[in-house]
Structure formats: structure tokens, C-alpha cells
Amino acid sequence: METRQYATDRMKKVALITGASSGIGEALAKVAAEKGYNLALIARNADNLEAVASVCRSKGADVLAFTGDVSREADCKGFFEAALQKFGTCHVLINNAGISMRAVFNHTSPDVLARLMDINFWGTVYCTKYALPALLENKGSVVGVSSVAGFKGLPGRTGYSASKFAMQGFLESLRCENLETGLHVLIACPGYTASNIRKTALGKDGSSQKETPLDESKLMSAETVAEKIWAAVESRKKYLVLTFKGKMAVWINKWWPGLADRLAYNLIKKEPDSPF
Image (cartoon, rainbow, N blue to C red; front, top):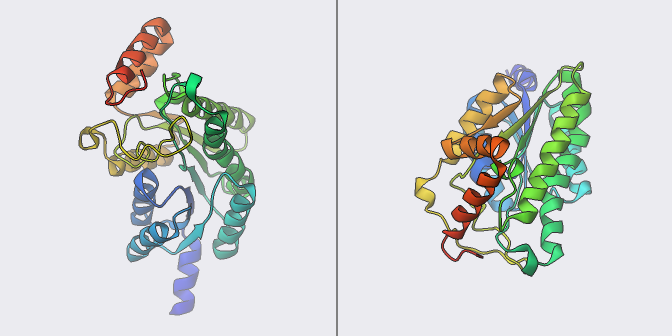
């Protein structure tokens, strides 16, 4: 019986999810477990990550919880090697780990922008690089959890927008390179979502702001975002832009970029403790 169960578990699809200890990453992991995936999860907070892994195991998933920082290439390589040793392959990689910022560039240390690029952009590059051979073999999916800030540069978010623009450019190029290999690439832009990303956003000196400027209760839930991202993976969509405001921002920026600039500035300016 144990041998048969082990064989059944090995036949399950395997999803790798970064930044899985909270927010959208946590929700993505739980939805994947409910869908029958085995999981390899990575995050920096070991206790929170293990708590998420425990819930996913209770839903029937076999789970690898790997404590690591995606801004470090060695951690990304170690994560994939551990996943490969445990599961033998992978079918979906969701690059979800990310961090934001909230400060005017003129007063911001360049180190803040470097940190954002290391996590949001290079973390995606490193994890995708090591997972790609298995994903190509399975005609699997690479997902980048990006943002409307990857389509429209936002004031007070120079490093965040830059990192998301870079992520999207990388993933679009990867998609073009693999038009004939069967690899699926999804760029998912959730819009404002209830999560910890604003509380951990970096200020001008690199410290976390700790307080969110938004009413989180009025934002789309991480669980809803996760359901929609997984639906987009299963239908092999190329882009997913969520929320009415998010879709309008992308559309207006395409046709009336000057108006988009003014609307974005006015929106950020109205935030509590706005940098403007």
C-alpha cells in the first residue's frame, strides 16, 4: 500500500512557488494543494513557510519547504535541486516572491532599487534558469507575478516599476524564444491585493515602512487572486490583468500616456503619508 501511494504521489504534477510564506504566495500554494499538486515552496521566513506547508499537507499534497532568499542565486539553485531530488521533475514555476517601495527617487538610496531588482527581477531569472530544463521537458508553465506597475511607471515606486518592467521584458522574451517548444509563459498582474507587500515596502533608506497606506479590507483578496492565476495557468493564458482599475490603467496608458501620468500621480498623492 505504501509503495502504491508513493507511486501515485510521484505521478502528481509538481508546482514550485516562491515567496510562499504569506499573501498571494501562500494562497497560491493552498489552491495548488487543493488541485492535487505536490509542492516545492521557498521563502525567507522558515516558521511561516512551515505553517503554510503544514496546511498544504493536510490537503493531500507532498510538500518541500525550503528556507531561502531568491535574490541569492545559490539559494535558487539549491531550491530547485532539492525539489528535483524529492519529486524528480516540475511542471509549474510561479515566480511570486517580491518586494515593493514607497519613496521619491530624488531622496532614495540606490541600494533600495538594487534590492528590488535583486528580488523581483533576478529572483525570477535565477529560479527560471534552474527550473527551465524540466519545464521544457514537460511543456510546463512559467508564471511571473508582476503588477500594473510593470506596464505603467508609478510615482514613488521607481525601483518597483523598474523591476516589474524588467521581469515582464524577460518573460516576454522567454515566451518568444519558446514559441515552438510548448513552454507556457504567463505574466500575471494582480493590481492592489490585500497582502503584506505594502507593510514590507522599503522606504528611502531601505527600512520597511511597516504600515500600509491603503484600506486592505477593500482590496481583492489573495485567495481570489490565486484562484484566477491558477485558472490562467490551466487555460495557458499569456497575460492576466486583474481588477477594473488595473485594466483601466493599462488601457489608458496605452492610448493616453499623459493622462495616465496625471491619474497615477494624483492617486499616489492622495495616499496617507504620501511622499508627494
